[in-house]
Length: 135
Ligand SMILES: [Ca+2]
Ligand SMILES: [Ca+2]
Image (tube, rainbow, N blue to C red; front, side, top):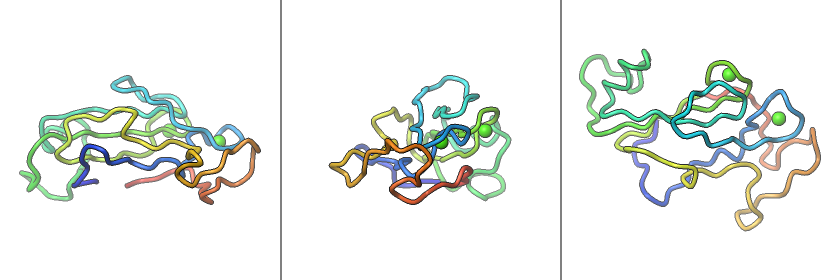
């Protein structure tokens, strides 16, 4: 859950291999409001408030029973690394929407300290090989 996302911020997904079934490090594919079903999918769903998001998704986002202390819109970001159901979600509180420009995808450009990853199977430059995340 991110409470202070604002214009110009970047959500760094460069350390996450977006396809655990393929050798090497893959980047996520931005798919906007599409269904999230394939390895590499990065999608969003947007809601008017956190209670609407919780009701629609059947999950507890803020850890609070009943009315949330957080007001304003919610954007839920879903990532999938192995197909089927999404494997992680990021709740952006007070955010009405995001697009691909709000994320950093693997590999990071060298201007941001990344290295190109042309060698399949080697650890990611950030050293992250995990497949499932829950924020
Ligand atoms: Ca991979
Ligand atoms: Ca999955």
